[in-house]
Image (tube, one colour):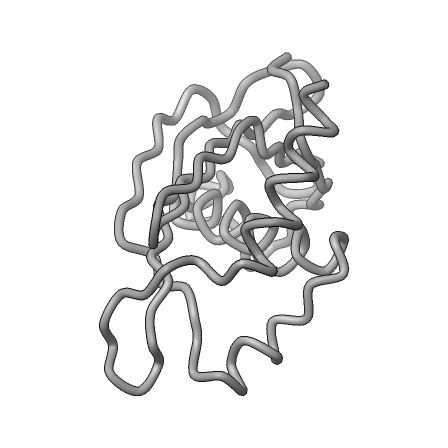
Length: 141
């Protein structure tokens, strides 16, 4: 299993599956996105509302996922952030999803920080960059 900076389990619900009974592929991306920002930022004590009040948000600019195996109703999927790279205005979050020890999917999401009112890219806020950077450094040793 890949080294993990952060992980969250998700139990597959009926509405996550398609007619074949397997998890519909977009749900892996949705789950990963939900831990990449809300779950991780909450765990680090970053209140996203503060950014929104300052007209700052992060939008997904790129998604790349490779699917390796299927999941089904009632399976537990462990979603891992395996690495984070931060640039000036963008952040790439790498991850892997496992069912027990089986790799289900792996990929990345690229977020771009924007001024919410102009929709133009802006530098990653220092508060965010410092807290996430310190967390990564602590986890990687």
